[in-house]
Length: 148
Image (cartoon, rainbow, N blue to C red):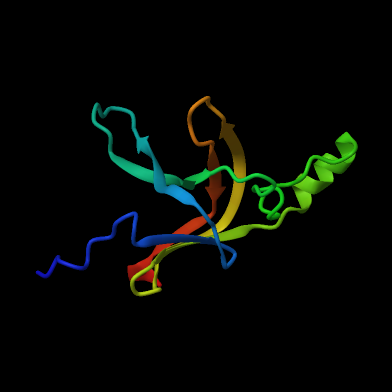
């Protein structure tokens, strides 16, 4: 089993949203979760089986915070709006996004996350430090390199 040259590292990975590279990305974390519920019946102490009832995908991105460029200016997160009604329309009209993690060495996708929506953007500015943005997302599905 050849490992050398096949290990993914942060220096080798790139992130793109809808085909646009996320510049100055510092981290990405994706999670697939299948929710199971126990099936219990009368006159049995043990669980009979566990049945799937849900599927969830979540993503967390870390980026450096750039002046005058953020998730809203890129169109990935809705702008506020002049009124509550306009803000609501901006949120409802935002399209689903596609996030791709790319192997920078081969330019091949490592994982593709479909139906991505940015739920939270958290910007931190500390004295004596570089500002960072932490972004939490929800998504519909994820496909890794073996499924593409």
